[in-house]
Amino acid sequence: MKIFGCIVGLALLSVQVSCLKSPPGAETLTACTNIAVRKEVRSLTSAEWSAYTEAAKAAYNDKWIDWFGYLHDRIAMPIHGNSMFLVYHRALTRDYEKILRGYNPSVSVPYWNSMVDYQKPDTSAVLSNTGVGGNGQGDGGCVNTGFASTWEYSYPSKHCLRRKYNNGTGISSWYSPEFVTHILQSSVKYSDICAGLENSVHGVVHLSLAGEMDTMYSPEDPAFWIHHANIDRLFSQWQAVNPDERTYLIDGVAPDGSVMTLNTPLVGGTSKPAYTVMRLGYGDMCYTYDTIEKATAGDDASLLKRDVQKCIPRPNPATEAIKQLPVHVLEKFYPSFANGTVNPLENEMTSLTPLHPIGYDGTFVPRSPNEELRGKMPVPAKLTAEWKNMQNACEEEVKELEDRACAMVEALNKANYLSPYLF
Ligand SMILES: *[C@@H]1O[C@H](CO)[C@@H](O)[C@H](O)[C@H]1NC(C)=O
Ligand SMILES: *[C@@H]1O[C@H](CO)[C@@H](O)[C@H](O)[C@H]1NC(C)=O
Ligand SMILES: [Cu+2]
Image 1 (spheres, rainbow, N blue to C red):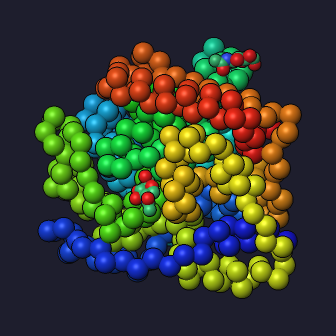
Image 2 (image 1 turned 90 degrees about the vertical axis):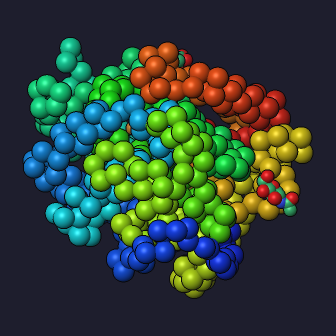
């Protein structure tokens, strides 16, 4: 019985009529005929996960992973800590996906919804032997689990795949679905969503896995790609909430300190202007996310047809719990919940990702909230001084964001909010 699909299907019934105008140059981008659908890594079937890892291994054998590590390292400064971050990493992840599809055209890069793991990240199935492997072992900190356990790189010098969790054998708390929902609902400008994602989920996952992930050649960790697909998914969902206004919305600071525009060239490699990557499904950006697909009327209709007789529709426990918060808390952190205009794409509280293993072929039942953990949401870990320095991060911007995250956790705990993501 597919309870999850049914709930999501019901929640997402809405029709969007677009009158999007392409900016100069972008009208030449043609609609893709073959669109890759990126799915949550734990919702892949065994066959899909194994196709993905086989393609990744082939790319590794042909030294593509070394190349991506080298590339990212060489252009590290211009692509972090400014408005280049989201668009550049979108292009990079797509380049990697195109390489993999050269080995197997059915493959797309899965995304890792790391937010649902935020309480105890080290227990995530994604960091297990059937996923991308866990903590590094011994003096070298070499990862000896997961599909990349034997991988060795030549850039910047010969070494194994390394990880070093930031709390011994454990990992400190990450950003929650509640906080990312806040970011999605409160970001107005492109630069808001860009800095909001870079300095929260993005940074904390990188620096707490450590090893390759807190270097500038981090694409050498297979966790990098599924993590960046998740960051790109959130950016894409934010755009899709209001496609007319946001598809080609760009602002903030470019790598050279000037104003970022649609014509600012993407750094590294092709130097194509930023507008070439803004619209999914056009030009080279021939992919989408399952969450965005499900939000289209056509898909919902078929989902409902399939599932409506098999399961009993009921309210999503995650969204229902958060809507019960006092009005002043909603107004402060969740403007769209507060005024009742929430679009499913700016609500990460709908994705109650099951905690089943990677390559899962069965059905699942959504977790129910843990009553004993009422009012015990942990505060996410802060970015370290070394990380902020390496990432060219704006100190005040990071502090403002971390203070906000702390205030949100405090407000939710004070209201006795029951987070369905605590176990
Ligand atoms: C590290 O782990 C210990 C024990 O597992 C826990 O009590 C502590 O809060 C953790 N520290 C951080 C910064 O997450
Ligand atoms: C509701 O809040 C969102 C987010 O602040 C805002 O964009 C939207 O215009 C508001 N809608 C109404 C009807 O007040
Ligand atoms: Cu990066």
